[in-house]
Length: 184
Image 1 (cartoon, rainbow, N blue to C red):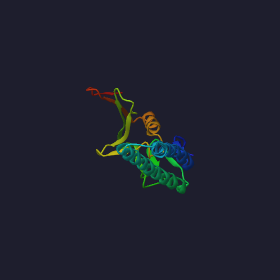
Image 2 (image 1 turned 45 degrees about the horizontal axis):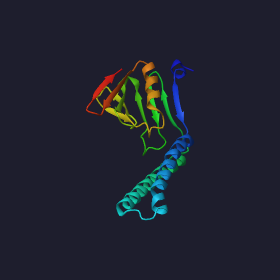
Image 3 (image 1 turned 90 degrees about the vertical axis):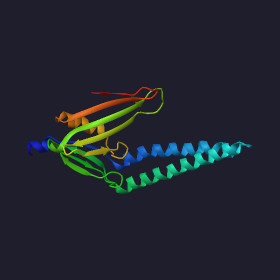
Image 4 (image 1 turned 60 degrees about the vertical axis):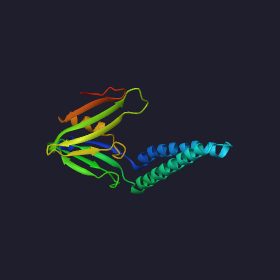
């Protein structure tokens, strides 16, 4: 076994694990549809505007449930794992569902930096928006969608940082007339 082969870090997540995570999203969609449908079925004399809003909310929640169900079935039908391999000279990101995310392989020498951009919203209960990018020396950016990539990009980027690549982490705050960004 060569030195290169002993210095490989691998991250992996099975299709069943991904499907289980997506099942939580499915349950939320179904509960949402039931919450919108409940007043329609149980309360008499609902105003027309409220009825239209409740029906619209139920339809949207059910459509989202169909989309999530299709994603679960697609993931389970692949019966492969998502994995990322980082060696001293190469990054390989494997996705068994190519229409969700395309697999790729990049030599580390081609990567200028990796980036995590987090946008937080002041005075809001919204979750931060987190975006991940691989910046290539050619100027091209590869966006890694944390929801579709199967593997947490921050974990992979931390490993790349250990191997000498620059990992830019920026936090941007928005809301209430305040907008500023910090870097680390």
